[in-house]
Image (cartoon, rainbow, N blue to C red; front, side):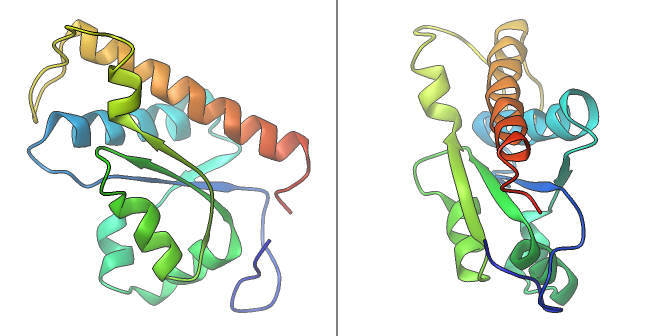
Length: 145
């Protein structure tokens, strides 16, 4: 694991970095899944990082990313969340792609870039649960220091 700017980790947290895909349903699903993880499923183990702050090279955000294991949730195969964590010097423990989850739900209509359907929420919760399971696993293996 990488260390933060001060040479040590400051808490037992995993950072979840969702896609920014504004106006795209996959981006909305990514962000909503991240909110479910941090607000409902494992709020004591996960925090969110805003991808825009990372892209803008915000020093505090870069420090967080370097000090904690990260999980990226990307809307598409471009992997912007994952790539930007790596460019900032962070470690992506696991990267998830919304499209891979949707491929298991052929014909599903998840909604639009601004609103999810019932099907969209079901797949979003599936993504969130997979991310939360990964967070739990990292914490149980004491990979989060």
